[in-house]
Image (cartoon, rainbow, N blue to C red; front, side):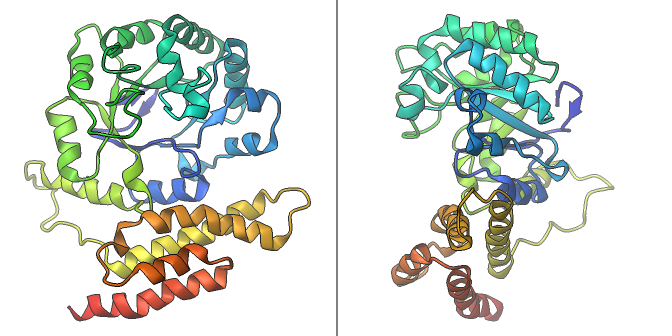
Length: 353
């Protein structure tokens, strides 16, 4: 599977762009565990053009992340074109246009999934951006605005005609937000359309190797994008890749035994590394006039989303007080102390089982 000159190989897994989630530290960990492509957090075109420092900071990428995409959103054509030119200077591998974000502050203002109510403008923005930059331009969108306006099969052809080099489809409408189950049938229909020649990337409810295998084999997508299931779980890429590899026919080059799964201690090491990476990366972008304590607190808050969502703590009896303490920690030492306490009890129990 290729986008432009980038060859991702067979059945690649992509990290979805997510606000307040896919920061540099998290992207690096997902890449380490096998994500074939990672994306930055959403970048507001209007804020980028206005030189808002917190938005400009999102353009910072490193060679260790490559291939990496920067995703922009907005409702003004000229701002989207100018933002795309600015993004190109940051040298990502792909520029992605966000026509899928359903949240009210984005879609309600006509950007993101709001563009599904103004298809001519969506197509105009896409065409103009493709003409303005040399990098591959891709699009991420949804099935339609609601169940009465399922436009994706026609829209996919129209976007392809604008010159995009790949299309990611989230199997929900904007009205669904993130509720209910993702519907992959229309994603499969788009992929089977003989007029479609660009890669189709499927997104929605991929949480296990069997989900990914179904996406590739039943619906025929070229790549799978994983979103919310990565929260506190960057190793999900390894787990799914290992599962996909196990489904392949045996060959002389196949390993004699499957890779060992990560232990509780291994996963805790990863979460602690994420905390350290966030401290390091946020420290590099310290805001003017911000104290060191405030900087550290931002790093902790940025990490707590993952600690709250990670599956490694689920099912632990009487865990609620520890969870509350973990999510109220305000210093690195306090949070690391809680995590190391969990290692001493839960990690020791795992070793003895």
